[in-house]
Image (cartoon, rainbow, N blue to C red):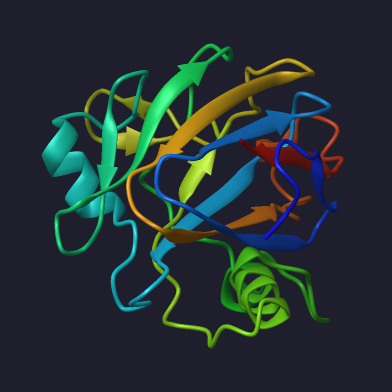
Length: 201
């Protein structure tokens, strides 16, 4: 378990996972302002139960969580609640984590860092087996829905130092990936990927 309140780095293009107790608050900081952070949460006692975007959208009756909203698991139980958000409130629950296939489709001939592999590496570092990759809560990601039908991929609107705080509603394992997408501008128009940070209190 990490030290109470200690600032932990999510390295650029890499993942990080930690154990969190029920009632603790995880603060995720967009340190440089333009970095998307893919976020997953798993029941610490049963990894087959995990935060689910499709179940959460139904529970919240919205596609972007705001302060007071609770994200739920694939068993429809509360797992994380948004308790503070200093960003403009633009996050994404629609898109899957990037993976090798996504980058192949974007023209990559060689291996490209990706959030799916980052999740597996982060969990492995905790000695946790990797489950199937659920759709993540893409913090700070700007995917507007246009005319109720189409989506676009735009740079984040958050600024350096802004953060979102999430309260654990069960004992859980939280995992992050500082998204390595540098082909389309979801990490800013300059496509520069950076580290982000989080703390647990």
